[in-house]
Length: 153
Image (cartoon, rainbow, N blue to C red; front, side):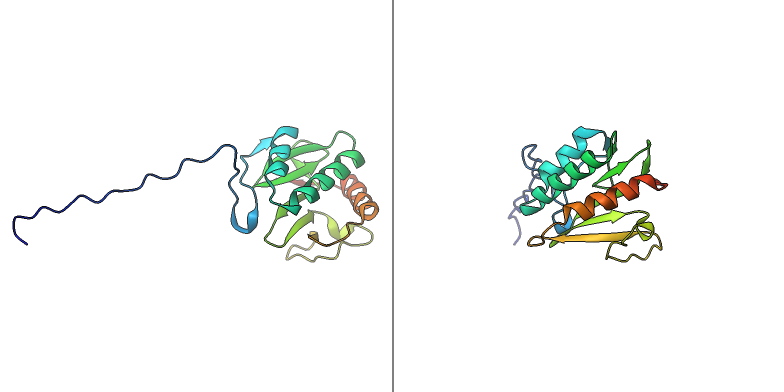
């Protein structure tokens, strides 16, 4: 229609991130900035959704108790653990239905963790909500993994 002006369309401003509520990526994995030491790892664990947070606490406790002076970091939105700076033996990551523990030299562990990888040396342990975590076996794998050469990443 001639002479009728169109109303300008309003654009919504993007929502501001809430510092109290962590951003969860695909599968519910927390988005935590890269960092080294206890603080970023604790931030990741605190941001893990639901039952996965308890799994993260138990994993962190077992790893910290089993490996004296373990190095910790957040890389690629996952906690990493190592015995040297920037050399890692294990990480874990949240997925929709489980928490995946990655042993970077897992093929050298006894017994070998059950989850296979496309990478020859990597093995996984998937922990689902109703799984009973065999903490003694996990601690043994952590001890073995920490004694092997780690992955530089």
